Length: 418
Image (cartoon, rainbow, N blue to C red; front, top):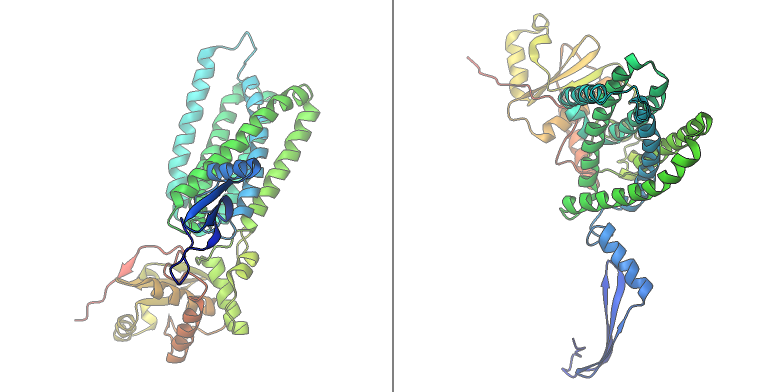
């Protein structure tokens, strides 16, 4: 490596090599020769190696701005969960009869098989029922997973106090809880990793997250040896330790979810953006909306609940002439109508993501009485359409509007005029 001047003569200078913004090597140049090469100090080398082991390649440029704050809180909650898991496992083994001469291996095996079977069935059912929602509300379901995980461990701690006849039922209950944790926690973690990956490097981000989790669990394993010897001899100490760790676990999880700044739209974030635009004529930033997004308790419902991708079967056509209905349906890629306390949005075959965003926009305005729904079917006016076009154009400057994960069902209709 040489330092070249504009005239073509070689000059003197230094070349600094860095990885992830940290200097790793300094090369001194004198004319066309390398005079010396200075290596970084040992502490810098150690830090650089640890970065390579536990952080994604290209950090911090390769990940989202909220990456480090989220990972710190996530690692702390993993440590608390690991320690509580040790207390729960100790209680389960005690309840299964480890150390009890009257307990049989066959009885324990049957209990374990029933536990695994109930977990597998609940895993399938939960994934079927809530699979789509996990993408839409990643923060909410991430926190849900940790609450249920702590509930399962609490029941494990209580299991030795239950009669022997109820122990298998308790094992099955905790297995069901952990299957919900596995689905909701694992799937939302994948969604969060996709958000953090800025260079299409979700696999690397996930791999390093796994390494961080294993390090946390390894530290937890070492601390567990001390914890078991110190507290398991006293029920009071055991429960005090468990409650303290469980509260810290939930606090750290809440802090982790709170620091996520997700730029894709979901029903809660999109509703807040629409309200701010209508009330204040502003487009709120991702930081502002994510800080205000409720992920413990849902948004207020307003007059109606919005359901996207619904069927036309509930539309009361006796209140609108058939030829007018065909005309309305033919003119738009979606149709909004009220049925009881719900706003049902139906989409024509070929409706785009923009059509879904547009339909939800108008449904939200109806929901909070910003515009009336006149008659059985809502028909947007040209001024309303212009306002939406202005809104979505401004929104696209800071938000990802190329996708609309708003919980839309797949029912679509087609129109054939006779």
